[in-house]
View 1 (cartoon, helix red, strand yellow):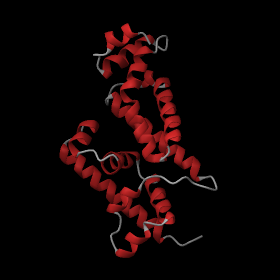
View 2: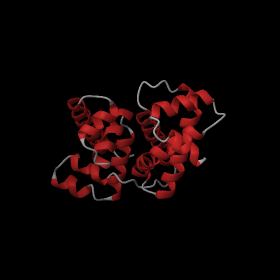
View 3: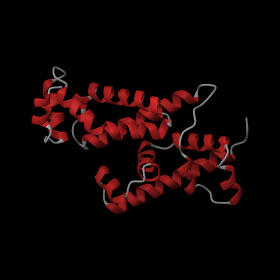
View 4: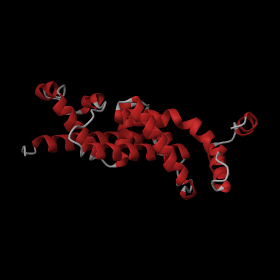
Length: 200
């Protein structure tokens, strides 16, 4: 990408860069590459929060942007590009975890921080330190709806303030707080349901 192009389009908004990329129809990907540069850290962080492995996160991030590029013509701008790419990152990461869960060995993921809103009895708090229960938590997380897993990643894994979540999702502050609480409840209930299932 030429320096002149970067300087010329550096002040363009995401929406403007998307419009340029859509107008080019794949003939010139420089505007999309600028979008990648703007959002690559966010996408990588989402992937890493799921995979807990830098190389896997890098591979998934590339897959996310490839999917976004291939589907850019379908992007209608109903949400911001940042929100759209964020959702693609979450869905891609979840799909990869589902694919890996069908393997004999499943990679661990960094969901330890989510245990703070799990059932709070002493026994459960101790048991969440074991690999088996972390795996159970991962399984519960994978069963959440995308809208639930998204806000949990933003709030409890990335530590974003409610105001930022509300702005990112284009909802009110109270709605953001409610959505996080409902997602935590859903994860807790799913975790308990899985824990209560009889062993095969």
